[in-house]
Image (cartoon, rainbow, N blue to C red):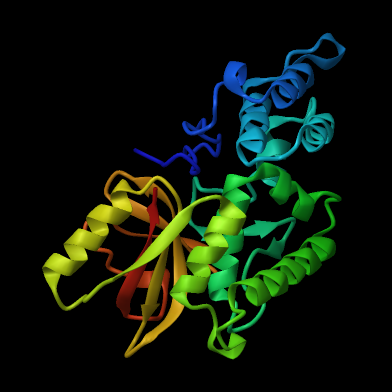
Length: 269
């Protein structure tokens, strides 16, 4: 099994982010903050706490934010950390929920922005905690909607919002929100070579990859969130559900009612 830099092992423990600078070479203030956060009150943080603190630093948060985040998660059980800071249980297929509240798009135009939102959740535990902070499912749902509305406005400034999110808007959203650039690679799914090339690029990607799907025309986004040997685990924002598709041919199967793959948004340097 391989999962990329901002994805996760199937036991839901986040993989270390290889692009994060070692603590010794981080900016002095941030490094000091993380070091202090790991040893406050004479207690060394556990491995999972360390991972989330490293990811918070890699997401670019300032020392004060990292310090407050460390105070909040200090001493929390691993199950609490995973539930509040990852939200998606990538170890299984099925509905994605927090305390029974689904993590899904709030209307028919926000599949792209919800995919961007989930990419940020996976990249930034401080952001995830801002959604799950008080354990209130209703508040979680309200925050999801408010964030999706914000993202929809910001990714569609020159594009009619009622048409959803353009691939270029989704790419800009990933750059701003999740910290990586992505560009559209169009796919002709009647051409086996085109599909094989897209599948290979998705398998090799080290970030979540949006898939642009539809029937006669592009109409919906899915988000590849993990790779499991011969399968890709895919998040569908419409029902808020994780499903698997074959990694070698990107057959959409039961991941969505749409039948055609039109493009993939591939991470770029």
